[in-house]
Length: 137
Image (cartoon, rainbow, N blue to C red; front, side, top):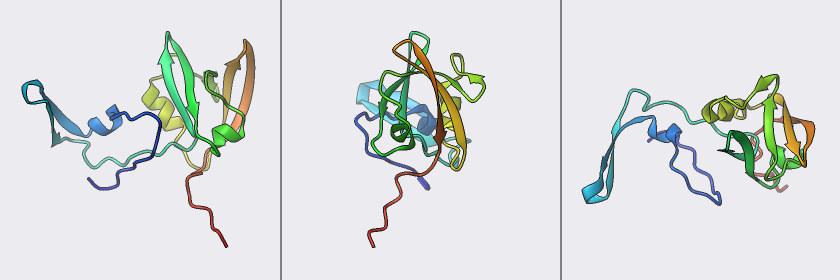
């Protein structure tokens, strides 16, 4: 598989972004998953530029965790914050895939409206590849 992106995380999920590249067959009797190249096999992976790991629970988009030293962490976003808007877009009904796309646009600054402790706040998130190695000269 060319151009795959892998990253270390507390959770390991083989997501729909990856699986959408294949025709997937589940062989339950042999405990196997068979992947055959699909129409989107050569699609380029998106890399998250925010450091936010988000989940959807009871209709709310919630920050599950924030990577240290990431743009999200630098702006003070914390686990359990509820994201309600990115820019002017209400994300309550926006698919998580679309949300992930919005947070993968390197070089953009996006305002994120979130709720913490029943208080609404807006942070401006500068999306950048914060995983680049630091030059140790």
